[in-house]
Image (tube, rainbow, N blue to C red; front, side, top):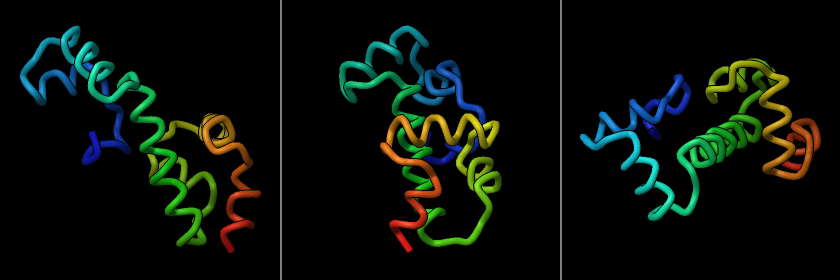
Length: 95
């Protein structure tokens, strides 16, 4: 998942990668990581985006796409939900 986080990742992809059924993959993920695979992936994408916000001058759209978000609007929404501040606020506080 970490290697392909910027791509479209499905539960079937994850299950195939570890040679188990999608249902078992969902169960194992929740049991061992205490998150769904989607929650984990979104959190990982946000963490990668935070690095780009801190260490680059890329536009929000470019960061969204590099982190695996389909649109900057969706990226902004997820970022604020998970970080508790807007992208602009985060970038200003880091600078």
